Image (cartoon, rainbow, N blue to C red; front, top):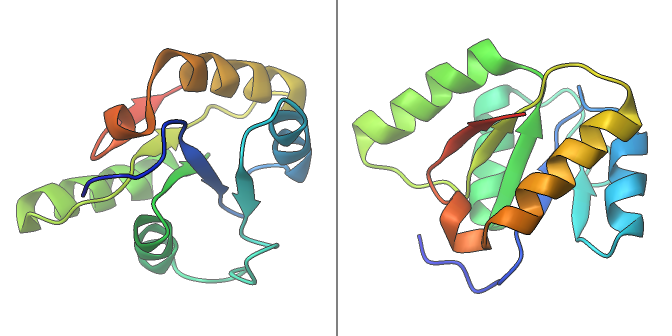
Length: 117
């Protein structure tokens, strides 16, 4: 998967507080949410497939399920734009850690990575 964006575009699943999206978006990053994309209630596998098709890094608090999905993608030779598993913290702290990660990597450097904040 070759991305056409310098900065990673984010897709926050429904477990991530919408305030995180607002904060990160306010700093100039492109952020999409499960609610905004009408993906609420969609299975995790579909969430990741959607993010991959849209070339977006998926951000979640659901570490266990997405570790399984990341392993499955690897074993099947499938590509995704990256997965960031965030520990549940106040929205401003989660946003701060996410922006630090965004400032440290290009979109291409997120590809097929499973990262933790």
